[in-house]
Length: 343
Image 1 (tube, rainbow, N blue to C red):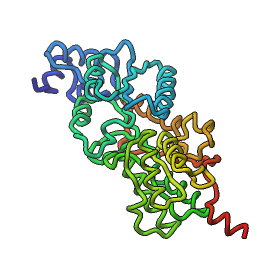
Image 2 (image 1 turned 180 degrees about the vertical axis):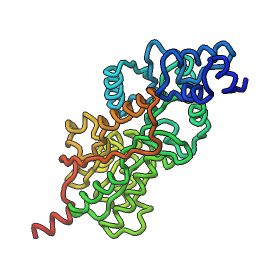
Image 3 (image 1 turned 120 degrees about the horizontal axis):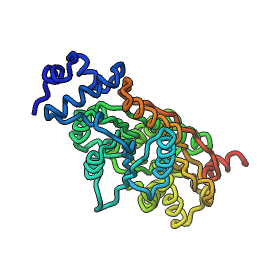
């Protein structure tokens, strides 16, 4: 049934402008007037917009791609704590291969009348995914925030880590240690974070190492331990003395791959991770990595979502957070540079 503002205005005894303000969740409308408009919707048989449905429990959907990678539980902890302090409860939805999909979770959350959804590295981060699922949520008026994976074809509120700057820092660090043959072990090409990390890497090796064609220095596998191991072995066979990895999980695999080839980290090859998950300081050797500002990103996501739920102007576009290089013992001077310094 097509909703007509004029019919609702007559039924509620208010102006069409007031009806529009209520339907769009905007402030400045008295509580009894707002209720009169909602009652008119019910009387006329119109479905209330998602953001206006009664929500006694204050539920917020939090959809994660997995829990195996420690970066995602880290995001969940920050977001859940921030929501609790604001009187909301997170409904944690974790995907597993062959299990419930993001679309399934979204449908379940809508049935429960959640006040909004935060997507962390969701299907929005897949450059080849169908954007229709998110356009439908926008049409429903559901408040949502998308973390990591900006898509220009989906208008929304995005919170992202600066992946380009991160790889710039990593390559600059390795070049300062005398490395010139530096590789990138990263995940599937279709993901926005992969695209950005690759862009940052290629730009950095050109700027700092004078490498104008880095196509053979990038290996795409999976964001897993085995993916990191396979990528590292390929890069080491191509003569790399240092490897930047797309995640700390991949970096663990890269170290395993180097050792399986009889190489030592960092004496023979330096490895740099990505995320600075809690375990990285306790690895052997402790991992040099790029710290993704999880706390700041999680808090920004919650703040933006709650503003939208409260009817405040919702920011559109991307808020980019700068990472930090954390130097530990998995990176060291290149052997050639060490030899030159001591001869």
